[in-house]
Length: 69
Image 1: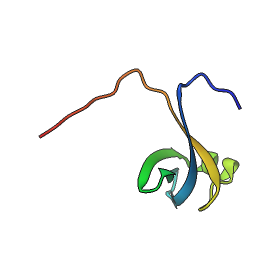
Image 2: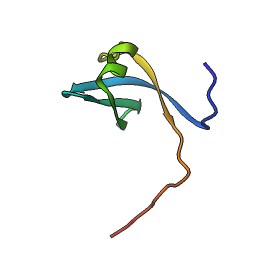
Image 3: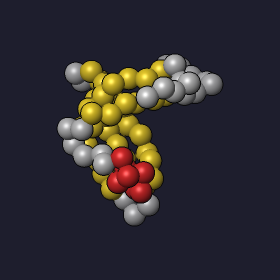
Image 4: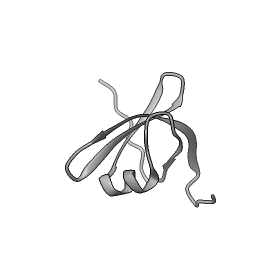
């Protein structure tokens, strides 16, 4: 697999929560470090995303917003 995004993290699927149209996919990229993605339910099914499956969190963004209280 080759992608143009610079931020690709190997991960394990921790949890998949199916909705009517979308699925919430929680990926663990390191112990205690999680990334949550909302993708279409059909994409989650096509990728065969289930708990424990290896996957990649690929993050491509032109902006990162940092905030503090």
